[in-house]
Length: 390
Image (cartoon, one colour):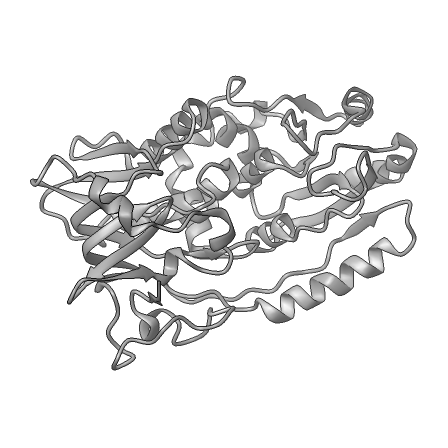
């Protein structure tokens, strides 16, 4: 199936295509959607190198710096983001396609990028006979999901930033239904809560969770194109929109909130094996240890906790995306297994103006550092005591 951009010339006029370009429309101006409004302009920003890189391997620091230089050179510009109106749109497994005359099924490129394709299934045309249609004709349906929506970090950065379109950008006169792909109860509840916190408890905006493995057909669907390109490039204006929009959740008594946070991780992979020992070390350094999880803190509590911190230490994982609610002066210090060089959090720190540092421990499975749990030697951490008081 070929893919077309919603509006290739408009979205990528100043850059942001970091792969083979999508098929061009006949006049290279038209696209699959009718442009409704601009959401975010194209963007670029500087990414300072890590302030500190700790590792028992003497070659790690230079290798990481070289890798980050390459990433910075190749991913310097983010595309614009816009609001589009699609006719005869089909949503399946977090990707959109459109039926165009005389009946061709064409993929919407903005949901079929190289970073998206490995994580979703292809739509079998045979499934279309089972496509579901929305049961209301008096509302506007809106979609701004992505393949990463199941992950708390990607939901906030890749998706929730696009909720800005629900303001004046759509110019709606009718009630709206936000279409979200369903995953599992805990993350769906967090996504719903955070979305309501951003848009407010408006009576004319509802949320509808759908089965992502069943095609859904919309005669008309509003679509908000991406404002990010994982693992690098996050629209600074989108991050700032959320920070400003959630100001009311950031707490009335910041003086009473902990200034130093140690954030643990309890997930299926990439856990800190000697978590108690490391937590004790940071507690001795006047950090408040916080256990993060869907059942421990509400979304509002997470926003409030991080927004008042001055230093945040934590295992590289979804909970640390809450640093996006920290002030620009915040110092962030990540713990990860040797070989985990994902630039996602380094990039987030750059967008927010945070000082970024990282400490690499010994992975349980060195061949799979991105998923392996690991050990951090507290002797290795003793050097950081002076950083926190400087």
